[in-house]
Image (cartoon, rainbow, N blue to C red; front, side, top):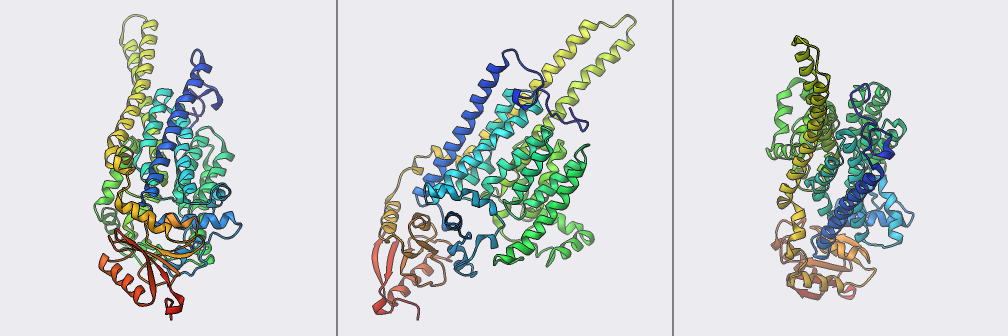
Length: 537
């Protein structure tokens, strides 16, 4: 145990740096590795099936799967990460680099996978593996902290079933896929006492997204309270905040974006200095914003609930505070603060690890209680202390407190299982996930009617099926006059207001000379007849 009270090697797995070993330790370690591999592998398969089934059933979207597909494809061809679908729809231009949207250069590491298979399926499989892989360093962290392989297995199960992870796997692809794994490595390497490894993991996190500097800075605050880590903690605070400022204010505009594009705090101030002034002069307004709307509090309760609120017993939870504040203080972009989508994946490992540490602290507090009670009884007694009895009581206390940690881990695993029916993982057990109705079959025929290598405007849910074999634009409220259009007039699709507006768009295209090539179940495929004026005047 370090001077700060954290374990660095005790009860570790053999390769992790010594500590107590069980009889037949090699056999136990092989068994542990098998269990961890089974948990991780099953999770990866489950996530992959879930996301690929959504893709096959036309339930993925141009926003956001096609954005990342086009960007990584550009990387794979040794170009900048251009996403024409994002640039055109958001008026940044057809050559817009996604580095001007979010600072996520880590996406480049996925480029070689596109040399194997060039399509959005590659991203979904990579995301499934990345999300599942975080269970391994998290297991090592829990095994060291709680001293029990059983408890560590249960924590790993709680992670792979955790609703923030599942919702990330179910919602297209995002850079958030890298965050759990890198965060778990960061925490496990800190626990192992490896300064250089911790610094490398932090640098990698800074490449995931511009606001990951807030997480690094938050973790730096935690390190400032731990002997031997204070210099690195100070560097993390300064470097993390500096990195977020540099990425959002300099690098993103340099690549064609806007520094204020995602400013969401108008209720508190027009810019960061104004928000600081509000916090100093009217802190109640800031506090009120944390619960406006109330679903923000629901999301926070569900996050802490993944640890049965044990995370509140650990200073490690402070590392998640800056990222959570960034989202919960926002007054626009409602997706940021709800349980759905991928945003909670950035902090779930921090929260779970804080829960593990909180359970450890509670266990150690309990383990000291029997010893002090025994010493008091011996001092009060008239005869010599019964050393055998005292040793037996201490041994029983250690066993009891170890099982207390396992009991907590069983509780968090049970919580994760209990949440499954309310989130996307339940779709795996729903036969409708794998059945294709008449409308989905018509969607497949509609996209098949578009030739390869075509420039096509496609409805949001149809765009991913075309992205691997053509240049895809989002069919939106502004006519782009592409040679091919795949429209949906059967139900409202992003970003239109209603189905009537979509029907008006299709009639307008026909009036301008576009020919209907396919029409069924609300899907309409049109192509421009250049000789009759099917182009923008």
